[in-house]
Length: 197
View (spheres, rainbow, N blue to C red):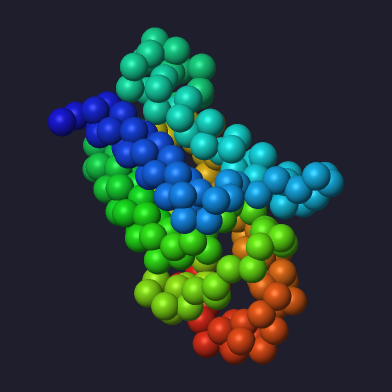
């Protein structure tokens, strides 16, 4: 398989993993796991930005792998277009997707996109969550870094930087909320587990 095929396959696997997790969580809880608050909250804004990041990455993959005549519109960073860098990026993206899928599975019915103030869920502190407070966000950030290395262009760079900033903010918002929800149990978890690694 060449890089085009690997990137298209990655996009399909990413989509399948997200849809599979959404459906699985919905079946287990009866609730849609992408949380949207009626007020215009910071969490809603972050969810919109995450959707925008995924859309930018999807567009990069499609233009790179299928409609390559349009790819120059994404302003490629040509000095990074080396086969070793591209291979490392593709490998990082696949490994990060696997890491994120494992972390999502370990969250089980507690998995959400956004902050769920309505339904109480179990605090997950085992598996990857014993090493990182936010392994899904870490995996998503690593995916964007890998895709930038695989397809170095202005759009994938913006998506990568946005992912780092947005998910760093979301991690802190979630931690504030989880302290208020779980109290001492989450405070103890904060002390013994790093935010990222």
